[in-house]
Length: 176
Image (cartoon, rainbow, N blue to C red; front, side, top):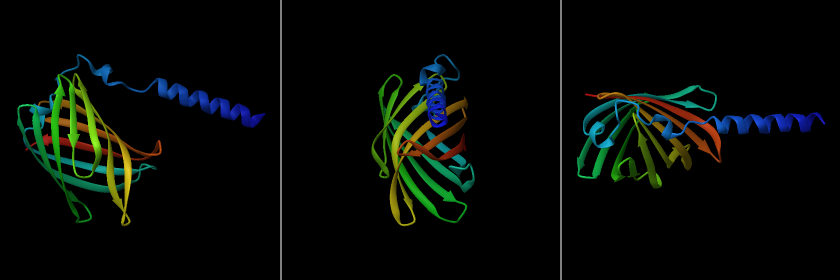
């Protein structure tokens, strides 16, 4: 009987937390308004950390970014410089698909990243292929970006595998 009570309590807790999750629509009307084609245009620099499932910082990094747009098509070239001395490059190919919707493609993204903006926020959903110990692991990313002002952004990302949180990324992005 104690197991049944524990299971019922756990189930209600999960349902409560799911019901409290944030929606992109919660940011409607907030300013400044985020438009990827404006913020990710020109030279940017970012600083961030990767935390594992226990919130231990397992990696620190800096990213040099160069963005450009031609109409509804954008390109964002990123060079990562990790604290362990390694580097990585990624180029995002972005498409504005509607007034508040975007798609993104990159070599290490499985399929298409889908994003929606509202007010000062963007929510990206995508699967990233991550190299770990010589193997490639697909992680689902729930990526939230918040425009602080026209030159500064905060990015928080939750990484999961099979629905279980395996880590987070915290990132500051600013104009150079």
